[in-house]
Length: 72
Image (cartoon, rainbow, N blue to C red; front, side, top):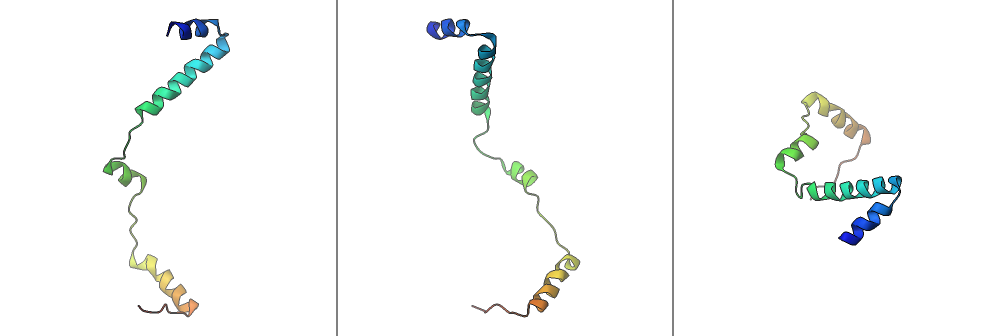
Protein backbone atom coordinates (compact mmCIF):
# COMPACT_ATOMS: atom_id res chain seq x y z
CA UNK A 1 0.00 0.00 0.00
CA UNK A 2 2.85 2.36 0.77
CA UNK A 3 4.14 1.85 -2.78
CA UNK A 4 0.80 2.93 -4.21
CA UNK A 5 0.77 6.06 -2.05
CA UNK A 6 4.30 6.97 -3.17
CA UNK A 7 3.35 6.55 -6.82
CA UNK A 8 0.18 8.61 -6.31
CA UNK A 9 2.15 11.43 -4.70
CA UNK A 10 4.44 11.61 -7.75
CA UNK A 11 1.56 12.15 -10.15
CA UNK A 12 0.73 15.58 -11.58
CA UNK A 13 -2.54 17.16 -10.29
CA UNK A 14 -4.60 16.20 -13.35
CA UNK A 15 -3.64 12.53 -13.05
CA UNK A 16 -4.30 12.61 -9.29
CA UNK A 17 -7.83 13.78 -10.06
CA UNK A 18 -8.21 11.00 -12.60
CA UNK A 19 -7.17 8.40 -10.00
CA UNK A 20 -9.60 9.89 -7.46
CA UNK A 21 -12.43 9.85 -10.04
CA UNK A 22 -11.71 6.22 -10.86
CA UNK A 23 -11.77 5.26 -7.17
CA UNK A 24 -15.12 7.06 -6.81
CA UNK A 25 -16.41 5.13 -9.83
CA UNK A 26 -15.39 1.83 -8.23
CA UNK A 27 -17.20 2.73 -5.01
CA UNK A 28 -20.39 3.67 -6.87
CA UNK A 29 -20.37 0.23 -8.50
CA UNK A 30 -20.20 -1.35 -5.04
CA UNK A 31 -23.11 0.70 -3.72
CA UNK A 32 -25.57 -0.21 -6.48
CA UNK A 33 -28.41 -2.46 -5.33
CA UNK A 34 -28.08 -6.04 -6.51
CA UNK A 35 -31.77 -6.64 -7.08
CA UNK A 36 -34.83 -4.56 -7.85
CA UNK A 37 -37.57 -4.26 -5.33
CA UNK A 38 -41.18 -4.78 -6.43
CA UNK A 39 -41.87 -1.09 -5.86
CA UNK A 40 -39.18 -0.14 -8.39
CA UNK A 41 -40.89 -2.17 -11.09
CA UNK A 42 -44.18 -0.40 -10.49
CA UNK A 43 -42.53 3.00 -10.85
CA UNK A 44 -40.60 2.07 -13.99
CA UNK A 45 -43.39 0.19 -15.77
CA UNK A 46 -46.76 1.53 -14.74
CA UNK A 47 -49.74 -0.57 -15.73
CA UNK A 48 -51.68 0.94 -18.60
CA UNK A 49 -55.45 1.03 -18.55
CA UNK A 50 -57.40 0.97 -21.80
CA UNK A 51 -61.03 1.88 -22.09
CA UNK A 52 -63.50 0.32 -24.50
CA UNK A 53 -63.27 3.52 -26.55
CA UNK A 54 -59.48 3.08 -26.83
CA UNK A 55 -59.91 -0.46 -28.10
CA UNK A 56 -62.45 0.39 -30.80
CA UNK A 57 -59.76 1.50 -33.23
CA UNK A 58 -58.22 -1.98 -33.09
CA UNK A 59 -61.50 -3.64 -33.88
CA UNK A 60 -62.05 -1.26 -36.80
CA UNK A 61 -58.58 -1.96 -38.16
CA UNK A 62 -59.14 -5.68 -37.79
CA UNK A 63 -62.20 -5.42 -40.01
CA UNK A 64 -60.27 -3.43 -42.60
CA UNK A 65 -57.52 -6.00 -42.59
CA UNK A 66 -60.09 -8.60 -43.59
CA UNK A 67 -58.29 -11.59 -42.17
CA UNK A 68 -59.17 -13.83 -39.29
CA UNK A 69 -56.44 -15.79 -37.57
CA UNK A 70 -57.01 -19.53 -37.55
CA UNK A 71 -58.34 -21.03 -34.32
CA UNK A 72 -56.25 -23.65 -32.60
